Length: 293
Image (tube, rainbow, N blue to C red; front, side, top):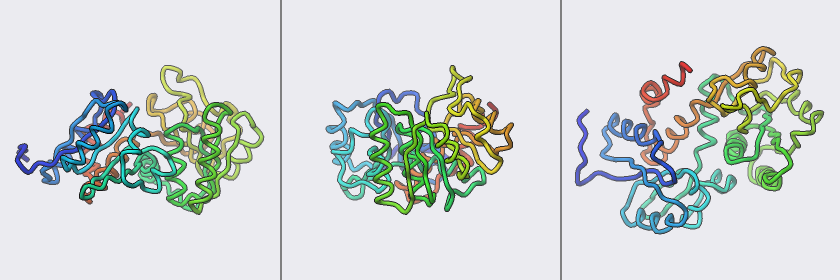
């Protein structure tokens, strides 16, 4: 359809630094046009030092909402009026909706992962999950998995800078959701094996195995895999990590994280518009090359 900026066009966008590489403007603007919405999505290179003034300006300008990427996901919280449960537990926001001047923070990163697993044909509800990592992606996935009905979550991390943060996250999940969560040291091989024996889903949310260190794997002992275990990796470059290749050889179904960005964007789109993003169209235009990788 023909598209024009008009006097009624509503604005939103992405705040972070850097942002010029983002494909989010193409995803959202194509979706607005497809659905006939007189909205536009732009990128703004803004770091934490200027974030407060920009957010206040956005409130005054009555934007429909905006996304945040690094390094603004945590820094934006003091400038918002309310947080969703997921954003509160994760301690980071990637999507803000403006409701008549009230700015509400959400986090759709975990939704993106859970939806990508669902699109691969797997239902996590009532299942047991082992999750490797304690960084931002792991926290988002852990929280959303707990909210969406995982019965038990084993969070596995190295003892280091993120260990105490992971412990606090486990406490909050146990307190505020119906999921039972616990924390395991990645170096404790026997306990990790017990976690995997009873899990239906293993997810690697660390950077181990990402190019150019594609020969690395967080689970070098392949005897821990079993055919009833879905093995997933948030890494999508390479499209099949060593973890996934070895799990597949052990008889495990596998999937990677190439669609996380698509589905977290679709979740943000619905928060703002109340409508479904045309994900098949966006997948074909911007993710088909990844499918072939």
